[in-house]
Amino acid sequence: LTARRLVEMAGYIIMGYLLYAELDTALTVRHHPLPAPEEMAEADNSKADMGQLALYARQVAEYLESSEAYTNPNLSLKDVAKATGLSSKNLSRAINTVLEKSFFDLVNGLRVEKSKGLLLAKKERGYTLDTIAEECGFNSRFTFNAAFKRATGLTTSEWLKSTKAV
Image (cartoon, rainbow, N blue to C red; front, side):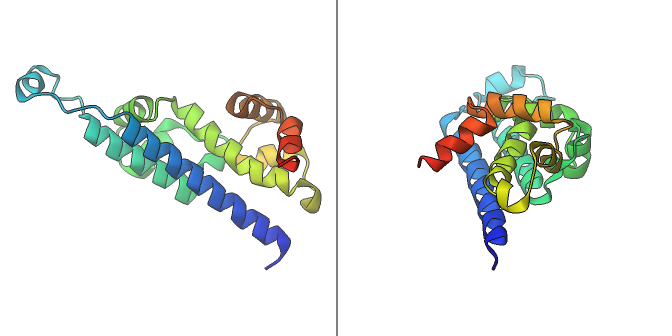
C-alpha cells in the first residue's frame, strides 16, 4: 500500500472509532430509565421511549458513517430520514436527546473528523483548504474553518502544529 492510501485508511479508522466512542458514551452515560407503566399511560403515545431513540441514533450514525452521506454539502435531515426509513421528527429527537447535539452539529462533526485525515496528508496530496472543505462536504472554506474551530477549539493550522508536537 502507498503512504497516501495508508493515511486515508487511518483517517477512516480514526473517524469510525471516534463516532463509535461518541455514540457508545452517549448511550451509556445518558441512561434514562423507562417510565413506570402508569407514567407511560399518561405520556403521549407518539413519543418514542429512550431505548427506541437510542436505536434510532445508532441507526443514523451507522448510516452516516457507512455511506459518507455527510460529504454531501446539501444533506438535509429529510434526506437522512428517507434513507434510514425514519420520520424526520423521530430522527431529530434521537439526535437531540441521545447524542445531545443538533443534526447539523452531528454532520459537521463527522466532516471535521474526515478533514483531520486529509489535513495530515495535505502536503503529499497537494490539497488546499478549499479542496479539503469541498471533499468533506462544506460549502466553503469559511464554513469549514468555523466548524473546525467550533469542534476542536483550534484553527486548522493550530491543530496541525499540535499533531506534529505529539
